Length: 88
Image 1 (tube, one colour):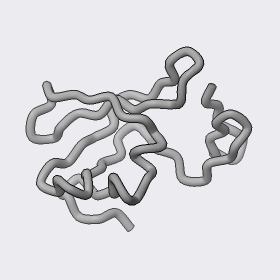
Image 2 (cartoon, one colour; image 1 turned 180 degrees about the vertical axis):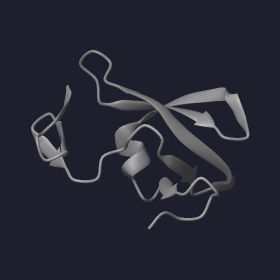
Image 3 (cartoon, helix red, strand yellow; image 1 turned 135 degrees about the vertical axis):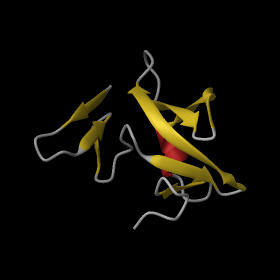
Image 4 (cartoon, helix red, strand yellow; image 1 turned 120 degrees about the horizontal axis):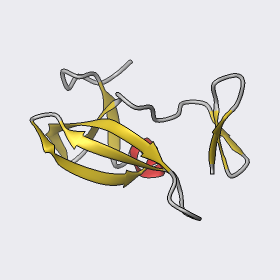
């Protein structure tokens, strides 16, 4: 279950996350920086971790399902601006 508190923080199974993944955010895999992915949907499958459906900016028909925890893992992904530059 993924809920939003009054302060805009996301609560995942009782844990506060101060910088949640949001629809419209852009990410790159650290091993494939020429691809920019945009978060188009957030959901939590029954009894599973929160996931994001992402769409490849250069080919919007290419969509993938990635766990939010993977997107937030700096070893796997980095958040970027739409241009592909690293987000502040």
